[in-house]
Image (cartoon, rainbow, N blue to C red; front, side, top):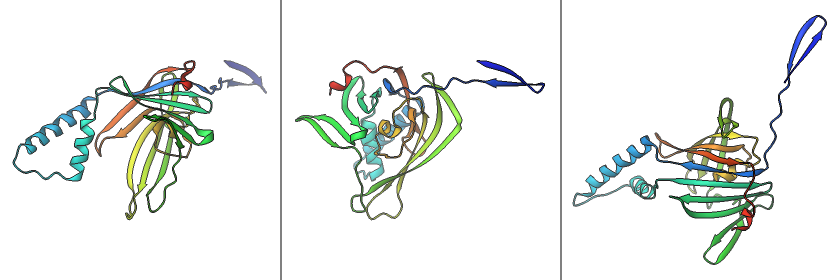
Length: 236
């Protein structure tokens, strides 16, 4: 809407922007589908390992063993569905359409509630680290000049560097996440990432997570609804 005002013989144009209204309840799913570059890398590594393992003796280093374990779990389709309503967040994690994990986060009470074989398990969401057990720290870089529209919401780029200080190691182990976040959805990004980050960032509607130093896996929001399904927080 434009308001035209004439002041002292000069024409000034005031453009009135409708302020974005915060959304406090809703649902969206962050989905990962196979990406050609990632799948080509996986196929290449599997072929290499198969050839190497054909010999009589083989000595695999720890990194390669980690890769084997990771790739063995790669599915055709993965998703993390986020349901939020003011002070509660429920997350459903699926692999190939099968629900593999469900948990409820109540930030105001610092609670994480999950279902185990024995029933519901309640624990503290934020876990304090120490020099004996190791601890996490984070660096956050925000670039509001780099934007994109996701599910109708304006998102801006945020880089989160996760640093794990392992006991006895001088240098931290680092992992960079590239996010596109929005401030219009009232969901703290740390809860969506699930990395025990107490610092508040916007709600991520796209997450680029490193598979290794050269390849990222991208999770992108789909199916956003501005209302959480009735009774969803009682389904745990």
